[in-house]
Image (cartoon, rainbow, N blue to C red; front, side, top):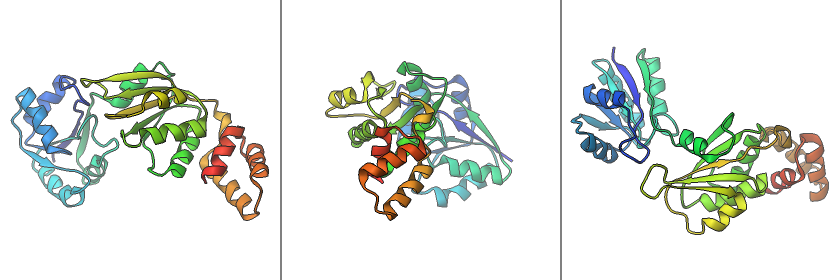
Length: 269
């Protein structure tokens, strides 16, 4: 029975990879890569000759049994496009399948955009809530932010350049003008870490480019309520045809929401 190694790869700078990761990538008979082109760039830089097969969201269903067959005869390394496999990528399904098939799964940690962004943000690292990529639509996105804000933890979000302004706008409407660290192109040539407020970030990033990790200041846990609680009250109020002003007051009373949070919840549902 082979071992499935989850090997973290650089998130930008090709030097951000551990000695252990390089050794394993040289030793395993097969490497399953989310993006084979990115993998070959990494391997060429470090002088690694490897047998590579693709494993991504488009072929995961058909490729899983192929990789399980390979594990029956030897070790396999799984790498994502960047960072740790199985975090916000289809590698999770392979991990589950490997565990169910009785294989050992071993993490080989390394670069992480989440940890790097939180560490450099200047915001509280004591507790943080990783949200990954938020929903594409404004209403669900605001509700996701409201639900996460109920914890009071620092919030961490991945976002594309095409949606980052919309996400900043929704965060401002749902959470108020909190502090934020906008981490762009982490470890790459044009890395930027901008610190300020949500409104300031909107003014600064008028034409966003690159990959973004947003670290948003946490608030008091009692300022918000879990989305499912608020959603239930909203459904009840809409069924009773409550007026907007009365509905917001009722949300504040029954869910412990601030006026701003209640307003955002009512108008985005």
